[in-house]
Amino acid sequence: MHTIHFGLFILGDMGLNCLLLLLNAYIIFLYFTKSYKFPNFFIIFSSSFIVFKLIQRCWYLFIVLPFEVKFEFSFIKDIVIAIIYTSIWIAYVLKSVRVKNTFVNGRRSEVTHSDIIS
Image (tube, rainbow, N blue to C red; front, side):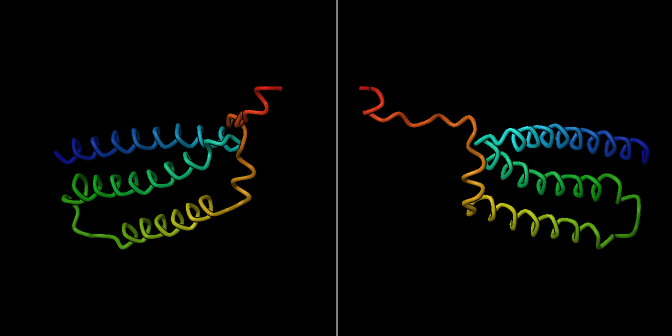
């Protein structure tokens, strides 16, 4: 029974990590192309990283830990650090003028009435 639960944990963890890897690759692509979509996807990715960490920890607590006695403080510490990190970077991305001026590629330019006439 223990190996079945541990196998479920490993498969779920591998699935989440593959999903995070794909999201990370897309974020890197948006960053280097300076796409206007980068700030929004960065916020989504950062928030989902916390959710993935919580899911990963819950899986571990309910699938693997019932067979073990000890609880580690690092479970909570990792999530708190991720929340602090995410809060700082999301605030920076939302408030920074540099971010607004850098990630502009791909945005449709606003066409004014005088541009259409001439």
